[in-house]
Length: 179
Length: 153
Image (spheres, each protein chain N blue to C red):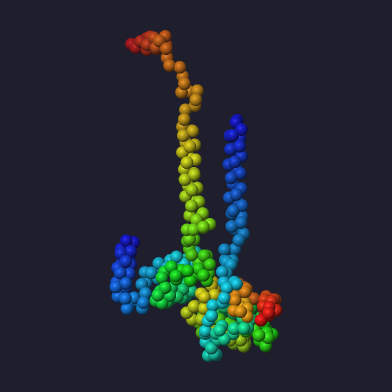
């Protein structure tokens, strides 16, 4: 057997290695974990009417740290898990220059209202019937929560239920920045 | 397919001709064409044009709205890419690193074909020793003739 054919004999099984490495990498990454291109960019403005009939717009909240939470009443369990944390954060931060806005997407009015009653949400919540705001924020599922700094830039996006820890950490970080 | 294309072209033509109406009327074929290139964000591997979901329906509405506002199909796609990243496109654009996705399968196929052809040629070639048998000389020919004559009745 020549040296060349001996090398070839090894090359064929070795060719499997990069393929296996690629597959191992591919199957370990979550195809739903998509980085948002919006982080660091100015947040899209929106002007909606809350379930209580009050106007809510991002422009009116300029200068505040704004938390925008996208939710739906059918989003079980994540939206139900995070709801008490959102209300707690609102109560803790509402007097410290922080605004929290809930945007109800892909939902019907009646179950959405029932959701708000169930958790006794006191922060503004508005439906986005045409889905415009949700596409403007690149939302692909509920819940998603965006943290917007005082300059109006998206600074962090959380996919899935937020917790007290995440809310506190992100809000405190943005509040600590010079106004 | 060609009939759909002709219809689309005719529609585009009439829309271009009827300029006052052009901004208000949106060609559903264009909406479908753009939707077919966008990923339905709540689905698994389904385009905005194909998905029956409410989200896809809303996205089609946004496409329609932007076209009606005078955006070109490219601008509408760029809007979705700006919000969702290149992930929103079902087919990655043919430029930069993404070009690999388009080129590598064909390059691999071509390389495989070349390899198979080379191997087949090697396998079907006669062994070097067998093809260089000495040509029969006069004595051998005479012997063959004699032996064949002996076998004939």
